[in-house]
Length: 90
Image (cartoon, rainbow, N blue to C red; front, side, top):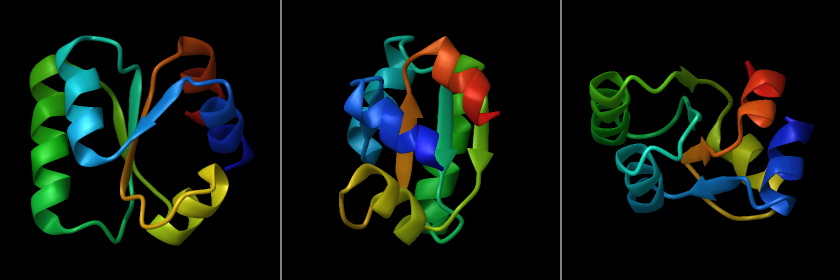
C-alpha cells in the first residue's frame, strides 16, 4: 500500500476512470488496481479494457485505502505506469 503513495509522488500513477482508460489505450499502463467497492459498471469497463489490451489488473483494497495512500478522496481505480512499481505491487 505504501508503494502506491510512492508511485503517486514519483508521477508513475494515474487515477480516475477516464485517465486510467486513456493510459490503457495509449499503452503506458503496466498494472491496473481496482477498488473492491467500485461499482460493477466501473469494474466491468476497466476489466474489459484490460483484457482487450492485455494489461494485468487486480481487484484489491477498498477505495478508502487507495485514496488514503495517494492523498486523494474517493479513488476507485489507479493505473501504474512503471514496470518497477508494477513488480512491487504484484
